[in-house]
Amino acid sequence: AARELVIWRGSQFSSKAIAALRVKGFLPSKDYKLSSAPMGLEERKKLLPAPYTVPVLRWDGEVVAGSDEICAFLDERVAEPLLFPAEHEGEIRRLERAASDLYWVNGWLSTVDAAGFERWSGARVRKYVSGGGAGVGPRLLFKALPGSVTSRMIHGVAKKSYLATLRRRGAELGGETGAACLRLAAERDTALVMEEARAMLRVFDRELQASATEFFCGASEPTAADLTLYGMLERWLGNSLCPGLNGPAQPSVIDGMPGLSLAWKRMHERFQRDCTLSEL
Image 1 (cartoon, rainbow, N blue to C red):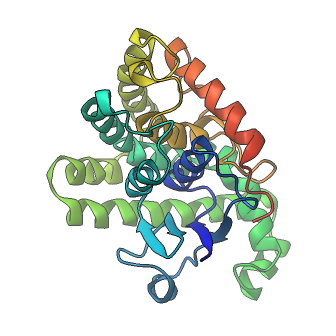
Image 2: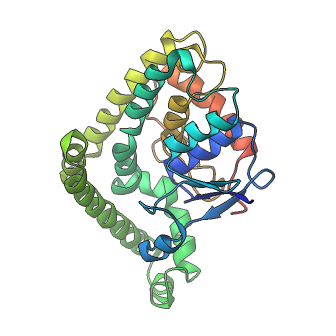
């Protein structure tokens, strides 16, 4: 049976799943196929299990949806190194959930913030539109208008879409996470969101500085919690595993955080070397 990981380029949890497979010794293209999911929901419903989002792993006849579930599945199939080390499983799962909570501020600072959007994917989106990926009308408009105007228009569309997602998910999720989404949907001050993100990141920095290794809980290899954090940092500091297409949305976000800086350096160097998505 085929082995395949279905992702979106630029997705934080897709980067996490690719990195998890690498920790277990599996390389894209060599040991499994990487595929891009369609953006349209109806198209995804034909291809993916509910909730019809990525990443999804197809592995020797089994289908596993979600990056957390993929990490647990890989631990069942490949014993070492464990993504959830048994002696620290509860703590790793707590840290993994906390790192997942960065998702919405991560998206805000790479989509709603104009400078963050430009650094992260401005060039990639302009290339997509100018090449006709968004249709003939946008391509002709792109060619007719000055670059500064089209860049503002493209960001305006991305920003509007992400704010709508925050409002929708806020209503769906409820509780603390839903409230955080609704609050971010109404926020327009980049400095405030940046400081919120840095406050969340400082908690991880303290944990990492207290660890005997560069990873959480003294682990010799990245755990599922480290990889969740990596997926967020890859968008803020790296290139979302797409060199030449994406860039770092917020390159100063972990300044002054030595524990995080070391963990990021180790993981980025390793996964960038083995797992780029340039051929996808």
